[in-house]
Image 1 (cartoon, helix red, strand yellow):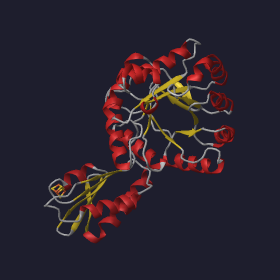
Image 2: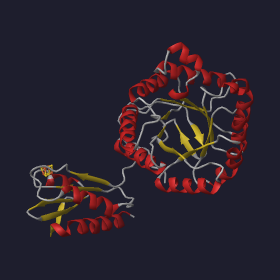
Image 3: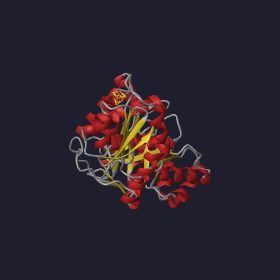
Image 4: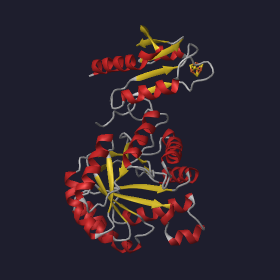
Length: 365
Ligand code: SF4
C-alpha cells in the first residue's frame, strides 16, 4: 500500500503545487513516490503488463512505458486500463503519440523538450486535450538530448541550460493556462543534477521528478542515485523518484524504496542492523547477516534486526533493535524488545532469529 506521510522529514518539504498522476497525488506534501520504467516492447501488451505486475508487487507506484512506434501507441489503452498502477507514456520526437497517449487514458505523458520541437506549434492543442482528459504532462529534460539551441548557447548541458529548457517548455503550456505539470532535469553527473534541481526548485512551484540519468550498472547507479536523491530530498526537494540502473527495473524500485526509507520519507520495512565485523568478531558476521537477510526476505513489517559480532556493541545494538543477536564464545544471546530471551549455540542463531522475527511479525498483523 501507499506509505504513510513521514512524521519527521529531514527538512520541510518544498511547497510544490499538487498534481494527480491517476490516483497517486504528486507534490503538495504528498508522500514521495517511486517510479520505474518497463523494458519490454510496449506493443507486447502481455509482456508489458506482466512486468508492470512484477513492478507493482515490488512496491513501484507509477510506471512509465516507452512509445516509439504506432504499434506501441495502439497498445497504450489496454495497458493503461489493465495496469494496477498509473501508466505514463514516454514520448520523444512524435507529437502525434502525445495525443494518442492522452486519448488512451494514460495517467500522464512525458515529453522531452529537446527532441520534440515540432510539438511547440501544437502546444495549444495538446494543452486542450490534456485539460479535457485531466492528464498531467511531465516535461522531462535530459542532458543527452538537450535542445540544440541551448546546447549552442551554453556549450554543454549545464544546470542553467537544463533548467532553462524545462522552464521555457513550461512557459509554452502556461500561455494556454495549463499548469498540470511535473518537471525533471536529469543528468548523469550527480553534482550537475543536484545543482539543476536546486535552481529549478527555486524558480517554479511545479512538483519535481528526480533522476540521475544513465546512472550506470547496479552498484554505481545505486550509489550515484542515493547520493544525489539523498542530498535533494534532505533539502525537501523531490516529489517522485526514479533510479535508473542498467539492471532489471524491479531492482530500481528496491533501491528507490530503500532511499526513501533511509530518509524516513517512507515507513521503514525490515531493516538489518549488522556490524562490519572486525578482529574482535567471534562469529562469521557476513554469513550470519546474509543468512538472516535471506531468511527474512519478503517479511513486510517494520522490524529492526541487529546482527552483531561480539560483545562490544552487540548487546547495545541488539537491545535497541526489535530483535537481535549479540554473539560471543560460540553462542548467541537473542534479544527481543531489549530483553535476552534465549542463549543459543552459534549453529542455531539464524533459525532462532528467523523464528522470533516471524513471531513478532505475526503480533504486528
Ligand atoms: Fe567488531 Fe564487535 Fe563491533 Fe562487530 S560488534 S564490528 S565484531 S567490535
